[in-house]
Image 1 (cartoon, one colour):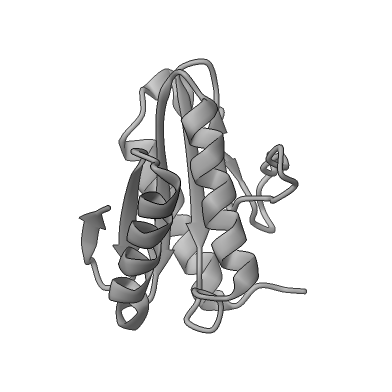
Image 2 (image 1 turned 90 degrees about the vertical axis):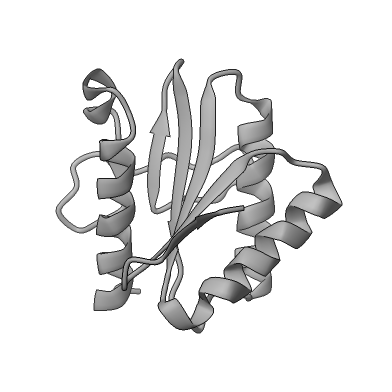
Length: 137
């Protein structure tokens, strides 16, 4: 199923954020699920495919773009939980980046707060929106 333009824009925003926050040496290892990318993200051990992935000895950074109709679906909640577990198992610098529309920003923050509270995860989740809002959970 082709992704929406909004979803592709969110993926690009995640890629840019990650590229700005890792070493220059690591940027070449960023995998992006986009039509023009030669390096697609690998499946996680729980069989999910993130939109953006940097998995090296130094970093595990998982990026997930969610449009308004996908933010709180059961599949999305399972992805979020799985990505937190994957980061919990990694010994390097780990965090998750999620990009959503401004009108779902608070909902996503609350979803991640609940998952982190339920699982005891201390992994940083950085949330971006298309209009420049940013926050950590």
